[in-house]
Image (cartoon, rainbow over all chains, first blue to last red; front, top):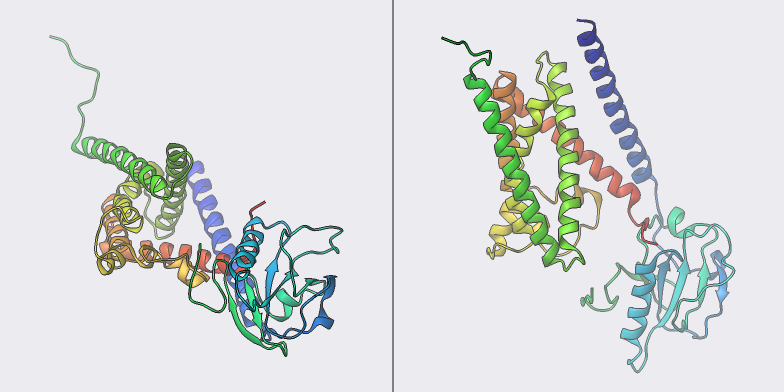
Length: 162
Length: 192
């Protein structure tokens, strides 16, 4: 009898814990999704330059790269490979995201005409509300966003390569 | 004349034994389906992936049986974990077919594949939490839920309607957890 009462108490506690955990998750999700985010705009003053931009004017394609993320770096190299044969390729660059300290050294393995920028102020996550590593932001010459495309997508085409 | 000390098996005992044997057969179905799915994705060690998948499926069933047992207890019915777990595994048989359809092993027309296995049978991974949570919603998922409710209602000697409500509530809770977790973790790469 005692063990049955104990089991019922444990069951009620377990269920209460599960419901509380689900509720806490829901509140965290609701708070996160209720935050207003701004449409991405390319403003160099908000980022720290790690490697200079060599291209002036024209379109910039900036890839959000986390230095511990191998698949988004793979995407960056694939993107560079895909646009290199073009007569007038867009300037490819990198925004280093979710990186608390300024990276001492980095080797992304491609030449980046739009430079490498460290998002020290978490603009990408906190102001733009972005989450997906490897996302490519296509900005026009005035820094206005044209498109934002996921890993594996060519920003100015519907083609996907992986 | 001698008397046996072994009690004769009752119809309930035989029914329970049959349920456990069926659950064992469903476990082997899972192993086969997961191994074949691992092959279609060109996994390095399909059998290892299948064993890991089966272990995950059994762990999920164990958790599902615990949650269902707690929920039944809350509404005044006592159903043992050992009675629920094999029934939940048997109900998951419909899901093995859905996994095969989603992996493209059944050569069905696209519309049929989507209707049976849900959006996961289409191309591309889900891009947000809502899509991820309900990617498996199709006719076979419905069959699984109804079969699970029917088996649980019989085990708990409860009405089918009560069992459907309970199964749907638990299923919806798990979907909400997947939806919210996916959205909150999206983009955080766990790859080295």
